[in-house]
Length: 229
Image (tube, rainbow, N blue to C red; front, side, top):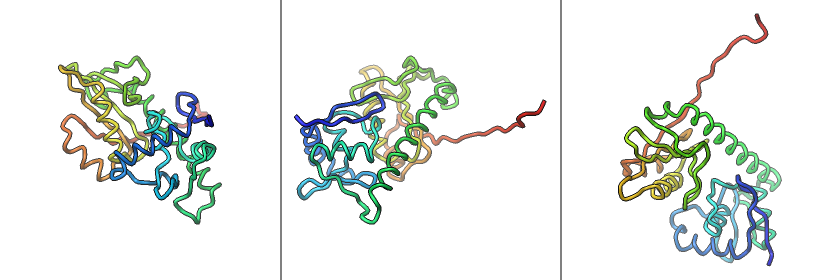
């Protein structure tokens, strides 16, 4: 069986053509009217339909989209499995677009990791009374990996999801899935989505979820002279 290797935040994952075909089928069934048919400048052309590469992998393998990089490495893996991966913008060279996509993904991952580390050290700046309960590492649940799992001062479970840039309505769905994973008959989990900005759809979607908060992060810098006694 022809296979390809996918790099994820937690190591390598083997992909098969059947995985991707399964993801395409699920996209047609559940996401065709909800998600864009292209990714960040790329799409899979299969017969007369387009599919966003990261959705096809996520839906076919169960690996959350936030756990792996798009762009060049993903496109090459899909092509090795026999899929036709094309550019959205025909006037952009493939080399420039692949490098830009990989750089953007890696930069985003680095910022999110730094943001998570900083927030773990100063969790009460997000909300008074929060206590981290995941032992210092991302909690694995059925829907994926929760960035930070905490408990509020009333003992309720709190899901904290971090996005380095703008969070869209798909991020709302991701947080809600994690909240559902932690919700029990006696404890309904809350959610806090932290991002640099929020799309209009994300803000609208969050309005109808009473136990979900959107928090925009910022940075404070301090400066001091160096090399002076």
